[in-house]
Image 1 (cartoon, rainbow, N blue to C red):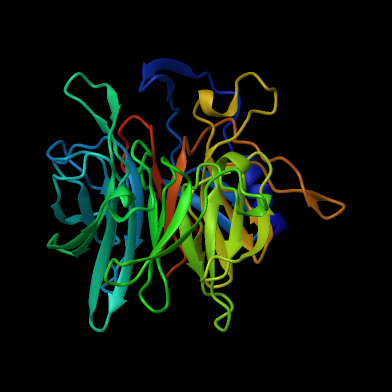
Image 2 (spheres, rainbow, N blue to C red):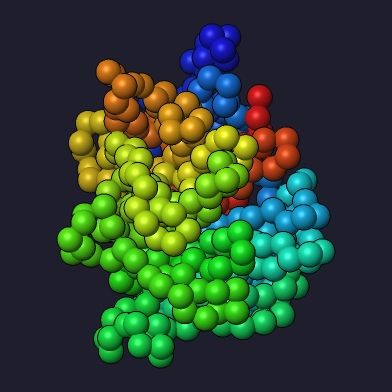
Length: 368
């Protein structure tokens, strides 16, 4: 482990000049050529491969939002460019297929296996870019599809079933599929509810939102949701409360269990692999407080064993004092601008999708 840390220190590029140009209302970083920078800590270190995705000009991108792996080992990505909402890669980064033109707010992507077939749950968050390049807001939706794009059904605005009032925003950001096929929808850009539907899309219950008597049920930017199967006898629904820099754990029926706070990390959805929880960190506040967290490109990713942070690829080494996690910060070399989602393959390599990263394709972090 110490050898890895020594290697990290020798290979980390620091003090390089950065220039900025405007993009999407933020400042876009002109990154140095890193040539295989090693990032991460302890047993979770990675070589950055920025050229993994073999995307030509014929496959334009806006934002690479999320990625999942199907039962065939293919990597499936959702973005918000309507020439190709879905891109499907093999592990070498070659594009195998692409489709989708109906999801201008393409944001969330979950996968579930039913028998011998994989199905996708696509989330359109309602934010879209108009002809003038301006971002506009409309109602979002969920689509269940086959892996080649056939739509099986949609879940639309909850006003139609009486659980939202007229004028309430519905801008979902993520779904998770429970052990019995129930669909959990995170309305992260809307009312901050977690809405539970049956496998057929029938409403069951909802929780979260704001101003609950028990504050443990409050969510602020319920950006992600996932099912934690690490205790097979007690699976839990894990919800992101991004503005709180926290994950909140609930039973499958929406009963609060616990909160896991990650100081200075505005995390996106939790991704589970073995005993680990992985998450993209979209923003963090710089140590020198020169800018606020969401005013610049300040992201990285984080990895936990159980409830303990063990590595921050693209960020500083996690430290605990008296059992309490201290603030973590982005590395000066900015290998990850905005960690929006991660996907882990069978070799424990990590694929990072970035939002607002100058239309860059997914990064591959090769485990070393």
